Length: 278
Image (cartoon, rainbow, N blue to C red; front, top):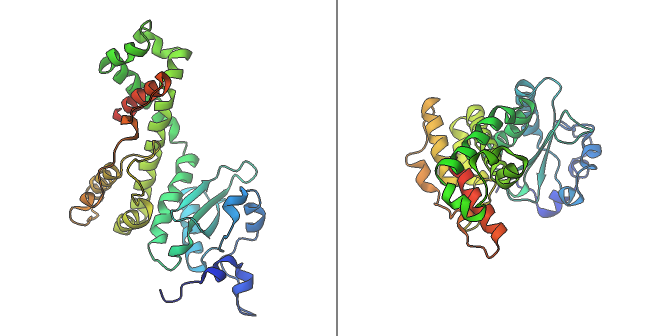
């Protein structure tokens, strides 16, 4: 790729790469102080933020999160985007987004960052509080109406009203956390779509959602489901998705269908499947 950084250059700081007198644009003065607070493995091989990318993404962050928002954008030797969405207590205004250094010259990295920015929007808008009661109600309803016989196989002495007790909640709480994580990921997908339109659909397919294994992570919705929801949202937003877009994503095996040998893990998997159906 023309203009791509070499591995050696990627491990250098920008000050080492810049020619004498070249302006240092787009840098955040507190960057190194912020990165110093991250785990060491997250700082290894970091590449300074792209000057062309930082400023427009910062302006979007300020508009959607608030005028005090600050952005640290860094290219990392990870091959998927990631974020620290305003969750460092001493730096509440900082959004930290890492993008794959291997794709530093790929135009799709900017719309991919829209998904990561969505995590900060989710937190700044306290959207979890809106979904929390709905998810709890849906999970308990699924257990009590559609999966009660399965539930009694593990907890024969419990009654449906016990689902509201501290002990009952401890049983389905993991499923609740998984579903809330799914809600957040879908929310971030829609944020990326709202901000970047059809460009996000291409970025999602290429960067955000590569299928790296047979089983998906419990904290993420199925890729095919995410793609279907993106297509549905695109139609409502008058965005034209590629033809048969969702069919480009494989149907993954659910991590909740794996057989386990212990009662506790079997129970968690069963309730987890209920949560995903909620």
